[in-house]
Length: 443
Image 1 (tube, rainbow, N blue to C red):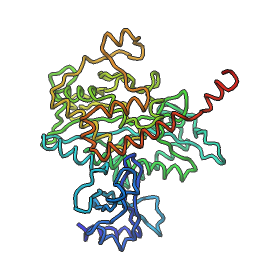
Image 2: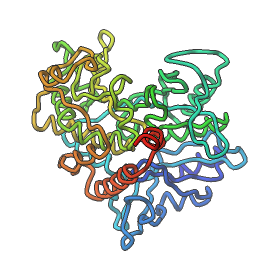
Image 3: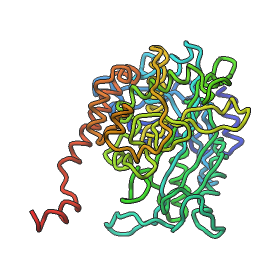
Image 4: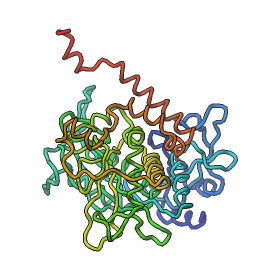
């Protein structure tokens, strides 16, 4: 494999290789090596100080090794032709040759292996939403949308169309099969969807797409933001996760021809598991203070813990499929947002669904009405709970959920909770402009 990859890098005239991984928060980390060091890196790995990466290792056990995943070799299409750069995604190992429990990619690998021992392949397809803003000079960070478009709006001279077109070209050069890209509901908001795949590939593609979008936007003097709710009063950005389980033969195990919703008993158990763990899942899939300003009624974001057929106000939706499209049967989880770490999100959602299967849980009846119109009495009568209203509530739910804690592993949960409680406490003591306007002259 190393000889083949070296030949490919030589053919692509690569000068530098970026070895990439993410920390627990999903931030891309990495090291750049000259291409002449690639053969040694493929053979021996690359050592680094894990204690300097958030959540990876304590100071007295800091040595860690990057092991390159050759299948993820891609040429970065925006790199200078005279200094052409490739990227390779890495797994993180301990010095004794074990996958590091503190690495998010390792967390997902372990959960996928658990699924495989049960005969399942977990397949996902996230919808990645983001905003494009004009670059601003000075200290004013208030975002300024670059356009005045709305949902599916099209203008042949719209700069956003050019950005989205270039994004598709770049993504395909990186081996990502984009299915659709379009303007979203809010001004300056966009979405890109890529082909359904196994969860590890989809997580790699999500991370890759995020920095690709940022790179292409920068070339147009714009900046891309994956902040869940950057503008008050408009829709926030989600990362809806479409998901299914396949058998060893590739057959979609969520499909059943004789069910009203074409869902198998396995799919119903999976729904029930995610509903049972929904509050704790929020901490992983909506992991910032700002995430909970998106998860409010009225902006197409889920608030209520229920499932439905096609209903976009539900936490879990069963999208419509065409006649005879058994392979397309899937569940759409709508609470994740693009600030999350996709490796941890997919590991947690799989763990919750598998728990429903193991315990043979039964979901409540579907809610196919507009849940935003329900009052407190109607919600109580249907037994519909709500997602956490703040990051603090979500973290408390995660701390009490042993299934998800076990899925993530102690190193990740300890570091994640420490970082997120620090974020919440820092936010909690801030004095905001809203408070000054509200109280400074009236209290």
